[in-house]
Image 1: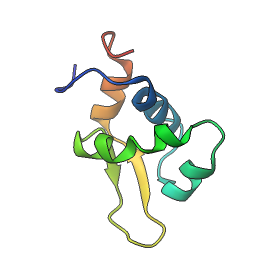
Image 2 (image 1 turned 90 degrees about the vertical axis):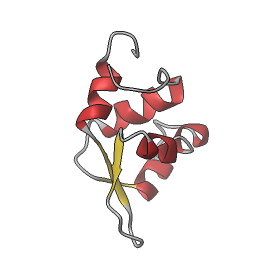
Image 3 (image 1 turned 180 degrees about the vertical axis):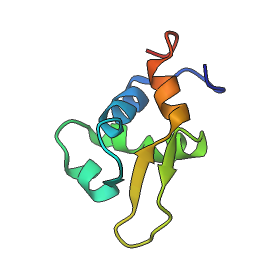
Length: 79
């Protein structure tokens, strides 16, 4: 299990979405019907916890789930 509080439903939805891709643009995440606006607002918190990695690019920024993010997503206490 990863450190920190349990994942919220919104955080689980974001991690579940990101798990399907290598790198995904933040714009694409914002346009998907699979996630709600409140879900997308969780991305910075997931980055801060080390569960999502940011590409660091200012133009067309992308994110991806980290190994810690996968572990948190599939942890029996977090799922």
